[in-house]
Length: 146
Image (tube, rainbow, N blue to C red; front, side, top):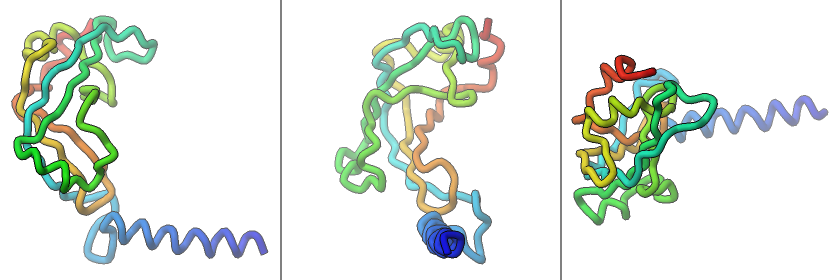
């Protein structure tokens, strides 16, 4: 009896998740994904050494920033309003920190401001929330890693 109940509980949960995240007959689960964009500015709050054992580089830093949308009323339209715009951590590689020399080259220093886009998922099953920095070149960060 327990086995039947667990299967019967799993099927509705799977169907509900497919509806919520846009997976269906005409879409591939996991993608393609579409997002609502909220352009704005990210202000770097702090840049501190990453001393964690799992860091990407010996010279890695943790960059904390605050995001402010260009349209201040945009926060009223967020799909995920409980996920804050403040005290965000800049991630690039495997959700890890970045080398200090690369951060300096990109001007990601305390108090600096950078164009940023808060992206909230509309369809698909990709990351629900992404902060994109369109003017930051991430292609050469490994060159700065010790």
